[in-house]
Image: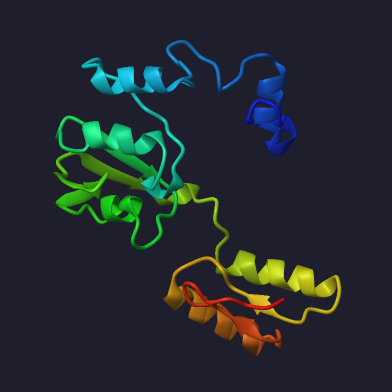
Length: 179
């Protein structure tokens, strides 16, 4: 996906992609698409770096990789981006001494390093700017906050309400809203 959309990058990366020197292809990089290849990584004693889709460590092959690596102090789990409450990713960020993976508790001996600067989530100012831009395009009847933790949602809701946004609401889990 990254290779097919060079227009999404800044000028430096765009030029790099168009020059044939892609940051997504270099010596030692091996893309794994088959489940059996992924399992072979977990069974190997060779040093490696596994780059996996995040999903807050809740589903997919990352669970298998974590199950086989989290108990060893020789491993590092690098978390890039926000991890929501009540997810395995958050429990790792909190450096819990034990984590549940596939229903089994595993002692966490792996080092956990967190890089907060790479989150794909907008910050509060970015969300307010987005809401203002939407409002400028036409009548806005309601704002529904469907992502984020409760405390920051309340703050954002208050800010939007004070700016005159109508009907700002953050639904509770399982709550239905009729549109």
